[in-house]
Figure 1 (cartoon, protein in one colour):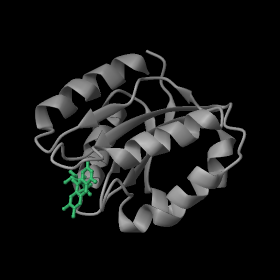
Figure 2 (cartoon, protein in one colour):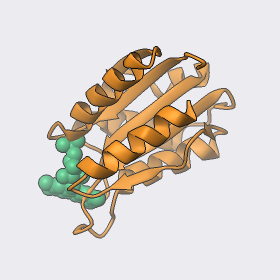
Figure 3 (cartoon, rainbow, N blue to C red):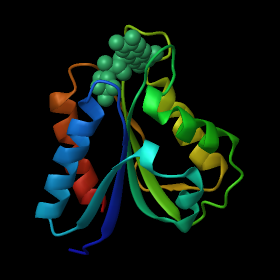
Figure 4 (cartoon, rainbow, N blue to C red):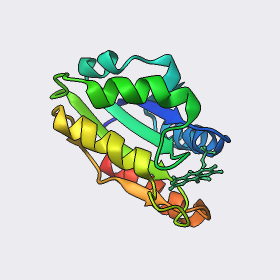
Length: 146
Ligand SMILES: Cc1cc2nc3c(=O)[nH]c(=O)nc-3n(C[C@H](O)[C@H](O)[C@H](O)COP(=O)(O)O)c2cc1C
């Protein structure tokens, strides 16, 4: 297997995305990959132009909005005019189908990254509240795609 250097960036309000980021990291490390995990509040959107392999694990709050700590990052990415040609990414979005804008932040983040030239290595997945079984499936698909 080809081992890689992978960044996991999460956006969370009540901890689900952070916990899944940790589980994803543990799994990928067991497979021999080198993984770093960071809150999107600790990175600048500009740094995405450096490229690399990035997994975004983000929840949606308010009415289709990012978690509070991710608001500045989201504004930067939405307004950005970056060259993301070297960014290979995927988005795992957490939400609740009871809300009108299901996984709205994950969707808008993906749109903004695509618009700026980012290349998805796996299609976005949107997970509802009872995400455990679907998360496990996604994490198998992810491992195979790397
Ligand atoms: C006040 C509130 C607003 C929410 N708004 C949305 C929303 O607009 N769309 C959506 O898909 N999910 C929404 N959710 C559901 C969360 O995204 C979901 O609970 C998710 O698992 C939280 O992940 P986190 O703990 O990483 O923040 C909302 C939840 C709460 C409590």
